[in-house]
Amino acid sequence: MEKGAGFIIVLLIASLILSGCIEGDIPKELPLGGSSGDAKDTDALIDDFEMDDYDSMDNLDDIIAKGEAAIPPLKEELKSEDPDRRWGATYAIGGIGFELDPDERDKVIPALKDGFDDEDPRLRQLSAGLAASFGDKSGLPILIEYLDDEELTFYAEPPEPYYVYSITVLRHYTGQDFGYDMEASAEENAEAIGKWWGWWNTNGESLSWVPGKSDEGRYIMK
Image 1 (cartoon, rainbow, N blue to C red):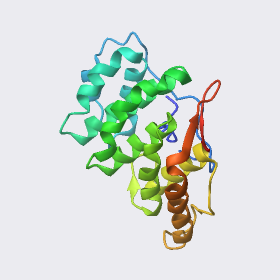
Image 2: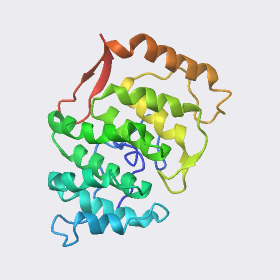
Image 3: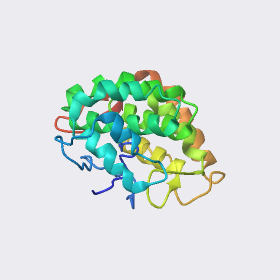
Image 4: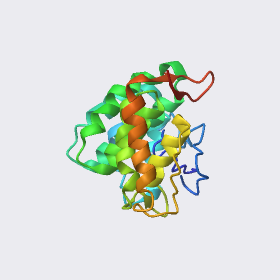
């Protein structure tokens, strides 16, 4: 399986939505693996997923290959007390969303927004990045929150800081940058981060999502 950490964002991204990424680029298609005829059910595939085992991402791609039929059991997994199961379910829901036609992707947003208040920062950021990539702008300020977070997270092999996913998604879907430098420290990026917050506070309410004709959409200011 080809692993696209830009989606694992988010998304893929992400999403969601970064593995060896070029600044501002997010894959237009999700890397998928497995078969829709896989005999293992969604619960069993989630059981075999482990956050510290990157190869077990194949299990989530097998769920994605099942399509919309997998969404109901995945929503149940979002209620799990195990953050790894919640993360895996969120990733898979995002992956299924990317496989839908652009004008149908908003149907997975409610499930993704359940993660906005999750106590696990990995899941919270992933949920925000995927929802934002499907047209829900309420995910954008959550991504901005992580622009100064240098902690390493499981989005790629090797792991990358939280801010990498946030700035990649923000740049890609808003067209803004404000001089943010991924090679600089959080302190050095303080001015750029302040401009991101200023942009959101000034324009957030008026931002409009314009769906892409064939794939991705963009946020524009009215």
